[in-house]
Length: 257
Ligand SMILES: [Zn+2]
Ligand SMILES: [Zn+2]
Image 1 (cartoon, helix red, strand yellow):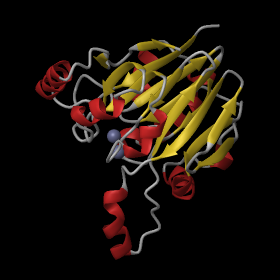
Image 2 (image 1 turned 180 degrees about the horizontal axis):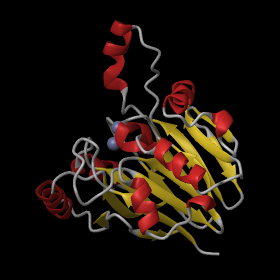
Image 3 (image 1 turned 60 degrees about the vertical axis):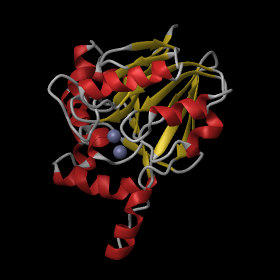
């Protein structure tokens, strides 16, 4: 059966906009559905594309910024109201599991009341989700490293866990950068990719161009997009640099895997 990767939301979380959802992706491998990130508008975007919430097998979250996770409880509520009974696997940054379980209580989605079991799986660096038909490897990035000083000052438990996901279906390989501070943590994983989904909010196109040299990346898909004129400038600069294999993501885009 055909495999696809759907882009459900392309907007940058820094500035939610009227006509796009923030970060959300759907991996479809055979009959299996994996939701990756669940930012604002993702639930609606998922339904708009005709997907059935009862068919979701698992949800993976790259990091806890709102534009990647703020609709996770809404999505669980949707599944609950559709009377799911099948267990659901939740793959969350390890630092998020305990606060999220408390938050479920606060929003009256107590695990004890749900007619389906939530199986929590902590994501740490190099964690591999192995499933029939695909593999997802988590790569720890430096996206949240700028919070170090504040975390130490306030003595917070935050571990600055943010991940890129390398997805391999056996036929195709796709790297979803999620958010980054620098491109360095994913540099070793850029070889022989069919698709690189790269965020444009924190990473300059010049850095993408430099990192892509000699790596054999079939297609680069720019996402986590800012204002229209910023997107236009980004594409113009990509063309100037000779990155002919770059396209801009759109909500609802389907990528064959
Ligand atoms: Zn983001
Ligand atoms: Zn972020």
